[in-house]
Length: 305
Ligand SMILES: Cc1cc2nc3c(=O)[nH]c(=O)nc-3n(C[C@H](O)[C@H](O)[C@H](O)COP(=O)(O)O)c2cc1C
Image (cartoon, protein in one colour):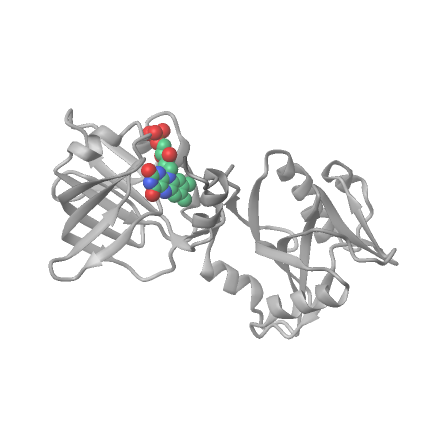
């Protein structure tokens, strides 16, 4: 019997940063099938080969194994909703997502960063998945940033860069830190706020924030950016994080997510952010907010269970 615990192995595999693709094909009945995959890998330039690993648990597995052709759409930043549809939606996934067809009638996701149309070259059995190798017969690439995935969460290098860089004179970089299911806040004369520091905005903000938290006596694992917004002369960015223990100072307290909307905060955008955090903590479907203090866009930061 294997000594390897599948849950922790899955976590270890998930630490590898990948892009996100949607793999599509036509079933024997000519119905479109598709699933979200991050197991995509380029294999060979000559001949042009790529691979993806469909799981035997997929409802579309028999269709993919039998298909003579398939296509890969590499998702662009902002297409996290499409990834979610092709990872979990029960109904007609294609009815929910804009798509067109390649010259062989296989669906391609509209506005994806890149499309590959492939002829199935070989299928290899590999445990609870198979390795599907395709020979690229057509492809198209557009400029832009891809959607990223690590540790069960989406990220976007483009959006992260935008969130953490600014032409404003002041960048406030803070962390919304969970400790045993509670959120760490710092008391200030004007109200509560997440621990934060002022940085130069020239790219070292994560390091500066980590060092600041270390000087408070905390070892924090930082995740994706949770919220970034401009207010007058300053740009604020708050990153999700987790830690084992609160700093040994009575300036800091931990609050259950339910209590967050009832507190007085140092600024209104922080109050809005913490109220959103309390709401999203109920389902742990966190979103990333990028905008100004009043309005902006939200992007999924799905937590995979
Ligand atoms: C980011 C991400 C990557 C995934 N990668 C794969 C993969 O490489 N292979 C796979 O079989 N399933 C993968 N999945 C899971 C499938 O997308 C999911 O189980 C599938 O859509 C379920 O389809 P079904 O309801 O038709 O069975 C991934 C899910 C996500 C969110």
